[in-house]
Every structure is written in C-alpha cells, then in structure tokens.
Image (cartoon, rainbow, N blue to C red; front, side, top):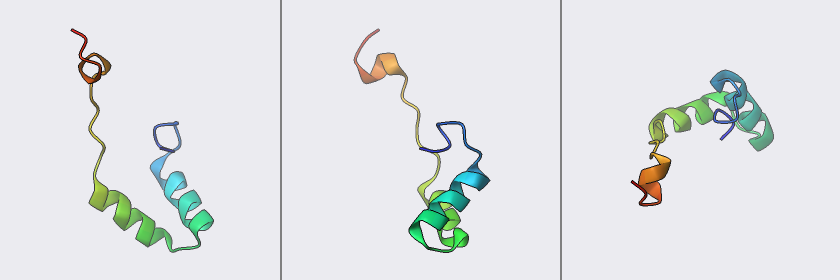
Length: 49
C-alpha cells in the first residue's frame, strides 16, 4: 500500500517494521514471499469492454 502511494520499498519496509516493532528483515521476507500484487485492468474488473 505504501509503495502504491509512491513510497520507496526500503522506506516502506522500515516504517512498517518500526510501527509493528519487528525486525525489518521479517517485514522484507514477508513482502518477498507475498510477491507483487497482480494489476487487474479497471475495465476487466468491472466487466467493461
């Protein structure tokens, strides 16, 4: 979500880790394991052609 808002991944991971009180490495590993979210074209998501 932070990346989508324009924040660099490194800063986003550091911020989430600080807010959650967990090591940055754990957040990074979770981000990598999740992978990049698929982007669905807006027209396809709503059934528009």
